[in-house]
Length: 352
Length: 283
Ligand SMILES: Nc1ncnc2c1ncn2[C@@H]1O[C@H](COP(=O)(O)OP(=O)(O)O)[C@@H](O)[C@H]1O
Ligand SMILES: [Mg+2]
Image 1 (tube, rainbow over the protein chains, first blue to last red):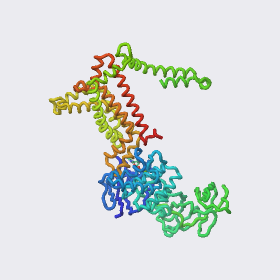
Image 2 (spheres, rainbow over the protein chains, first blue to last red):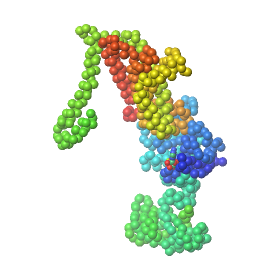
Image 3 (cartoon, chains in turn orange, purple):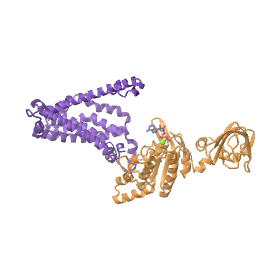
Image 4 (cartoon, each protein chain N blue to C red):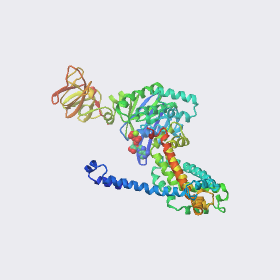
C-alpha cells in the first residue's frame, strides 16, 4: 500500500456526482498534481483527504491508517489555500507557530521551529509583521511555512499560485518544489494550469468530470496522452483526421500523403482516425529523419524571441508550429507557400 | 439630508458651480448642516445649563455632587454595571458561536436566524417579562425567582434577549469582513478545535465589532426599566425613573452623565479600532 492511498473515492452533492471512483496511490515524498479544468472535482478530492468533506464512498489511508472517520484537526495534514487564509490578528511568527501552540509544543522548541521555517521560506526578518503588511507572494510563503511547521504527514495545496501575479507565480513554483524536495514531504498540488503541473510534479493526475483520465509523469502525460481529453488539455495540439490504410502496421494517409505511424491501430481499414501533433514536432522545410512532407501556407508569424510560433494551413487544418530563432534565417513571410516536415512516429494517435 | 443636498447641487449647472464656490446649493447644505447641529446641540446645552442651576443665583455642580454622592445611585449603578458585564458575556457566548455556525454550516438558515434575532424588537418587553414570570415563578417547575442569585440570572437572560438584535448584527458584520470558512479550515488543519477557533481566531478579529455590540448592550442594560421593575431588582433604570419623578436638577445632571458615558464608550471603540495592530485602519 502506498503512503497515501485513495481507493474508489466518490462524492455526491445531492444529485450531482462530483467525484466518481477516484483511486490514487502516492508514495512517501512524492509530489503529485491534480490537473483539470475548473469544476472537475480536484478541490473536492483534496478536501476529502483533508477531512473537510466526507466521502460518499471509498477509503483514504495515510501511512497505513484509515483517516475517513478522523476529524480534520486530527489528521496531521498541512493545507495551503488559494486565498492564503493567514490569521489577520496574528503576526507572521505567530501564524507560523499557531499549529505548534495548539499542539502544546514547548515555547523554546516552537520558537526555534518558527525561525527555521521563516528561514526556509526566505523571510527570516518578517516574523514581526502582520499579514496585511505583506505582498501576496510573501503571504503565500508564510501560509506554506505555517502548514509545514507542524511537520504534517501530507501537504495539500489548492491552487496556491492562482491569486498571484504571473511573475511571482513562476518563481514560487520552483521555490515550493525545492522546499518540498528538501523536506521530502508527500504533497498533492491542485491546479488548472498545465504549465505548473508539468514543471513541478513527479506525477500528474489529469482529471475530467470527476474521474482520473490519466496518471503519469509529466513526460508521459505530454508525449503519450491516452485520451483525447488529456491530449487536448495538456499542451497545444494540432489535430488532423487521417484515413487508415493498414491497421496492423499503422499505415494511414493524411491529405493524400501516406505515412506509417509505427503502432497498430484499433480501427478497420478505410476508417477515419484522429491524429495530432505537438507544435515542436513540426518543422519548417525538409529535415533528415522527418520523412513526411506536407505542403502548407503561412497564415501567421509570432516572433517571441528565442521561439518563433508559426501558424500555417496544412491539410485543411490551422497548424501551430514552434521553431527556434536563428539569426541567419528570418521567419517566412505570411502568405508564402512552404513545406513542413514531420516524423510520422511523432504523431499522437487520439483514442477515445 | 445628504441625498437632498446632493440632488440640489447636481441639479445646478456645473459651470456655475465652478465659477462660484458658494453657490445656492452649497449655501443650502451649510444651512441644513448648521440646523442639524443646533437641533441636537441646543437641547443638550440647555439641559447642561439647567443641571448647573441647583444653587440659587450661581452656576454650580451641586446637582452632580448630589447625584454622584447618592448611595442609591452608587448601588444601582454598580449593580447595573455588573449586570451589563454578565449580559455582554452571555450574549457573546450565545451569539459568536451561533453567528459563526450559521456562516460556515447553515448559510441557508441566515434569514431565519436574522428574523429570530429581530423578534425582541417586535415583541414588547412587558410580554417577555410576564412570560418569564409565568415560566419561572416560585411555583413553577424551575422557580428561578425564588432566590436573589437566580433572579439576577433571569434578569441577565432577559437583558441578553433585548440586546440580541444588536449583538447579533454587530458580530455578524464583523464576521462578514473575514473569510471565516477558509480561516476555520486553516485553523482546523493546524489541529485547532472549536474553542481555539472561536477565541483565538474569530474573537480577536471581530473585537471592534464585539465592542460596539457590548457598548449597545451596556446602554440597554443601564436604561432598562420593565424587567428590573417587574423582577424587583435594584437596577439603574428604575432609579432614573424614580429620581426623574422626585428631583428637579438631578435628572438633568444624570442625563448629562449618561451622555458623557455614552461618548466615552464611543471614543473607546474608536481608540480600540485604531490601536488594534492588525486592522486596516492602522495602515
Ligand atoms: N459543497 C458543495 N455543494 C454542492 N456542490 C459542490 C460543493 N462543492 C463543490 N461542488 C460542485 O462540485 C463540482 C466540483 O467542484 P470542485 O471540486 O471545487 O472543482 P475544482 O476544484 O476542480 O474546480 C463543481 O461543480 C461544484 O459546483
Ligand atoms: Mg478548486
